Image (cartoon, rainbow, N blue to C red; front, top):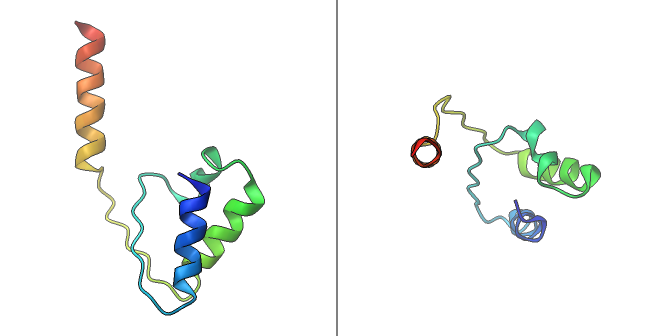
Length: 76
């Protein structure tokens, strides 16, 4: 995740615009890609404040496809 892109998205949220963000990682895992855990916590706080969180509970088609291709390439 690009910290700059997420900060830009959170700034737009405060102006009344709607933003949809999709992630294969739970909020707790966002610190793996963010360089600053405090920044990550602030971003999650701003994204979830007065927000609606939809969890599908399903794996992403793209993620499953990419993993399958990687496994196939590793075995050949």
